Amino acid sequence: MKVELLELKENRVRFLLKGVSAAFANGIRRAALAEVPNLAIDEIALYDNTSVLFDEQLALRLGLVPITAEDPSVFSLPEECQCGGAGCPGCRLDFMVTVEGPGMVYSRDIKFTDPSVRPVVDTIPLVVLGEGEKVVIEGYATLGVARSHAKWNAGTLCGYKNLPKIEIGPECNGCGKCIAECARNILVLEAERIKVTDPLNCSLCKLCVRACETGAVKVEPVLDCFVLSIEGDGSVKARDMVWMATSEIRKRAEYLGNWLAEFA
Image (cartoon, rainbow, N blue to C red; front, side):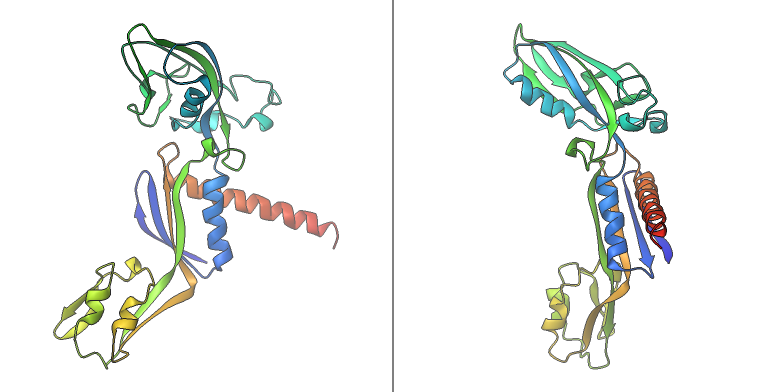
């Protein structure tokens, strides 16, 4: 297996994965979506809510606010914490929201007891308060995985595709019909010949193949090579999502191997 980095940003990473099966590439995608530990508001207590929203609606909005921490490793999953999930500073992070109208309640109004923890985006609107209306909320956030609930989903756009292989044969007469059909605009005409500018951006739709009357254009997937794109909501860095996803796959593979070894 070989890995080639294509793009690295805070919230997005793209890389080539060579010499693997589709099941392995899909395993990384699924693990990035469902197995990456992430902070989210878990339980709340509403002491006052005179806004137009029901308590349940406000609770849902709070639970979906993406949260980031400078050092997420200081928190443990409740089931792995020394307290056994009873609740302690190692697995719970308290917060409070106290706002009186008129005005909008934003995500920045969520005040955590740990100053290193904050909402990813400060301007997420939660509820509009009229004159004399207010909300007083307390609660806590915990670490969890999206397999248990969607509010712990750190990944937003995680996908993969086979690496496209595009060939322009000598039959090409430079008519340009394939260029007109290409939805990704990766084909250009140079010196009366079709040239591929960005093969990684090809979606393998093969519209260019159907448009070519001479049969010069061939598009095929490389079966053991994949382009993976992992993008998050900012609560966890994209590179850390890939690391944690692959670590989870390794841990499960080792567990399965040890379990099967007992019956060998």
